[in-house]
Length: 466
Figure: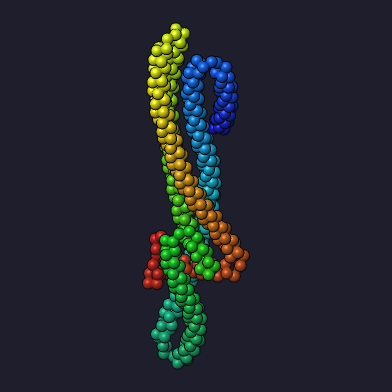
């Protein structure tokens, strides 16, 4: 509001200056016409005085023209100040727009961080539940295997004891004992065969589980290698490659969240760097503006001093001219031709000196005005160039901030896409059941099959299974 008031006051002062100049010119024209009529009505003796007065009016007109030129220079200076104020308003509007955009980006960043934290917590809880279920199933299978091995060893010991039995002296008892032992052996063989089949089936299932574990571990190793390679890339390549349905499993969601957090951290660092650059540009603009104001004030003060000195010199010369006119009039009133001639010669000498001084003053005045005008034009051009550079920089920063905004939007879209993919995968019972079974078997083998697990795979402290 203050700047708009200053602009309005500047326009009003310029209008008042133009009106005062026109009224002064009309008064000067009327005065000159009146003086011409008076001089025309006088006698030949008054011609010299009329000429002197006409020269005096010429000097006054030159002085007024100098005043007009000075006012024009001041108007140019005011116009330059008006342009500077307009540019300042534009810069303030641009700064406010950039500040609002940065605030929107910060809000979007906070929403994205909260969404990612929620997804990370939900995935961690689901993974813990799956690990507990896998551990329970592995313990049940191990108990079954131990029981089967114990039954097999008991049957083998029983068969050995029966085969090593002592024969009786009676043949009938021997035959009966042989028949009974044969029946018991047959029964034990059947039981042994049944137990052996169960044991073989259990071992076959364990071999199948081991094969599946090996396959899943190989796939996990491949996927971890791909994730580590893709983690060094920037922007949405990491998210898009990890969200591919052919490569994405629920286990990889944690790696996806870590990659998203790294991407968001890089974007936050980029936005912070842009904020620092914008603050630096604002500081440079304030320094340039202060420098320009100081130069403008110094030029104005110097011009005021020069104008004051020129006014004092012109006033002194006009006073001398009036004194000479008074002497001439006094000599004419007293009479005497030689005195009049001497006075005229003295007056002519004074007029020549006055003309020379006026020419020097006029030349100095023109040179000073040209110098001031040139300096003002140079300062305005330099300020305009600097403002153009600052505008280009601000436009570049605006484009970069828009790119960052688009990256934020793409990251949020990819997170929503990952959630939708998880939901759609939950809606397909066959795939979900198969994936859960494979992961249960994988974690079971990891937790309980000690020696075999150490030969087949290793445990990575950061990624879990690798």
